[in-house]
Length: 106
Image (tube, rainbow, N blue to C red; front, side, top):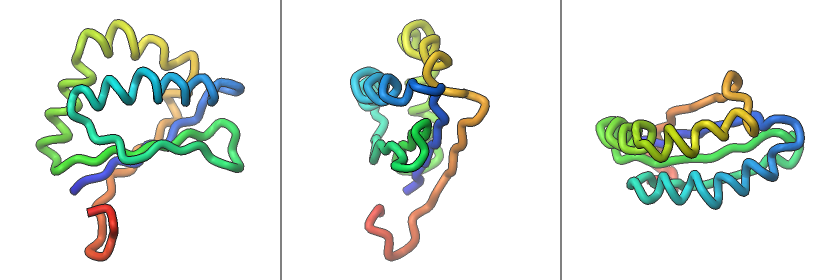
């Protein structure tokens, strides 16, 4: 398994809007394309931080699903154009994680 932990800095005052957008539009769309969204979080201390996690079987599946999502007309024309009003793209952090032998996330 391969996990992707993504950390986003929301534009000031936009985290609530971003969470609603993720939960109502982005996550359902990505799931419809085959992505597995493991978790979605807000930070208790940082009012602008949003964190989410996706799971892939392997790198080949990640590449395939990235193509299905990010090259789709719906992503390019409807979803992606709205992102900059709510998140700071330049500060996105992505960690690619492999679970250890005793991790419950196998």
